[in-house]
Amino acid sequence: MNINSLLSAYRSGNTTPEQIISKVLEEIDVYPGVWISRFSDDVLLAKARSLQECGPAGLPLYGIPFAAKDNIDVAGLPTTAACPAFAYDPKADATVVRLLLEAGAICLGKTNLDQFATGLVGTRSPHGVPENPYGKDFVPGGSSCGSAVAVARGLAAFSLGTDTAGSGRIPAAFNNLYGWKPTRGIVSTQGVVPACRTLDCVSVFATSAEDIPIISNIIAGFDPADSYSRKAEFYPERHVRRVGIPRAGQLEFFGDVDYAALWESKIVEILALGLEVIEIDFQPFLDAARLLYEGPWLTERYLATRELLETNPLALHPVTREIIQKGREGSAVMAFEAQYRLADLRRQAETVWESVDILCTP
Image (cartoon, rainbow, N blue to C red; front, top):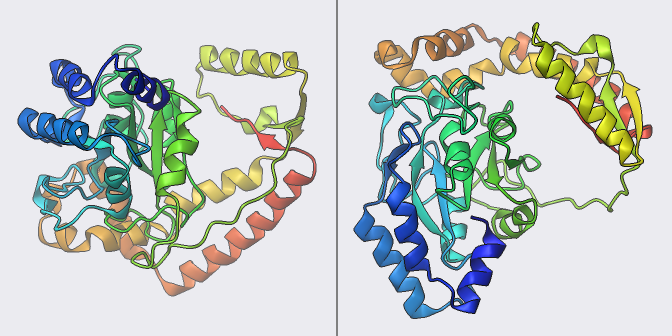
């Protein structure tokens, strides 16, 4: 279930969008906890038939089924952010959804998430926990847990998530997928429920690396409806020769010896590719990450949920509520101190790129 394979099958006449949607519908409800809402079978099949009548001309995602995280607006389905008391009916699709639909993709429905995209585990939702395909002993990762599992289970060719602190990349890793987090502002967040509005990104899950640029070419672009949208800056290609890894003392595996051993084995694989492995000072990156949950950026999460938190706090998951309500404590002094600190850390991190081409972390 990937874009190129499906498009090839459509072109050869081996299958049709209606047949693919029919196959998806046979399994779409087999795995609990993946979906919060979805379009009816009749609506999805009618959409597939309508596409077939028009044909694939000019549609780069002709008949490709995808899923959207339920903090992204899809017209015809409620947006809940995994909090029923927050639910509303959007009047229009989010920009990113609209662009995909215009390219011929078929949106199946809305997927589960850690409530208000706050969490990296995929377990903080009243709609249950999507089961990791590798077993019940493993969390699916979050916050975009449903979007990741939908693709990993073959229910969608790709899916949309969001990523502020890892909400897209972590569930991608935990479900053996490719997860793409674009540069901030390159993909519009118009129609996305904010977590930290100044930092939020729409992310993409796929089973094939080749699918990512196909999708990015469709959804990336300046959107005047998004106050934080910006025009893309393109950098020259770099041939990867030097791989940066954190110093051993800067990694924490929390007693999981298997995880630590897997990390060491990956370093051996990198060396076997003929690449140079260079230890770098990872502390500026770690310190910047801590600012996101220990600094004033929590106030952005509070602003996004303030009305519900003040009027109906019990509607929030207990852990989510505990995290977000700390945002009340933010001040202008804290905000500027954190911005200064982030600028210092960014300058320190810039020096890393003088010695390496990419970073690899567990």
